[in-house]
Image (cartoon, rainbow, N blue to C red; front, top):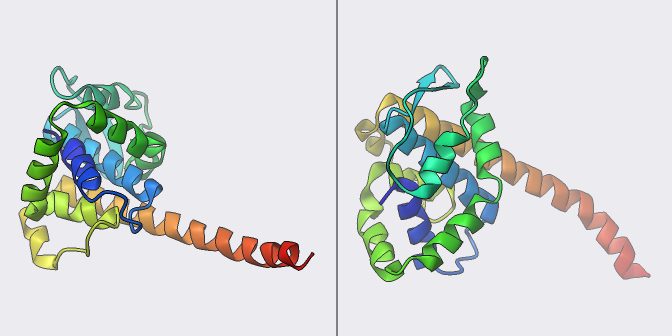
Length: 180
């Protein structure tokens, strides 16, 4: 089972936990796919740019789809651009895929068992499923994983700031409407 599938199964296992924001989970799933693509050497990280490499011949249909969506022309895409583009609506798509799977409970159990996997732990933290793991877990990560995890944490922080900004802007307007 790929990293994104494990993360999605974990989110399903946690049920409707209100801490899990759909957008945060979508960004974390896009990062999980990207980590799997780097491990499969389908994409190489050059600075903050994603350079397509070998095609992905095996794996989940979602991962093969992700590989097919890599920008193949220079100057290529940045990690953060990939997260925002690929992540759009991704949580719902993975949730549907998990629901269609015949072994949802087995997948969820496997994801929970893998809770201490450093990559999955950091992705789950980015999605709001758990606290950020201690710094010593980063010693078990490679350079690409650290770079991608850093970008997803920044993207989630930006999304939270945007949510807060919109909430502040809506606040006075909603108060005016309630007054009438």
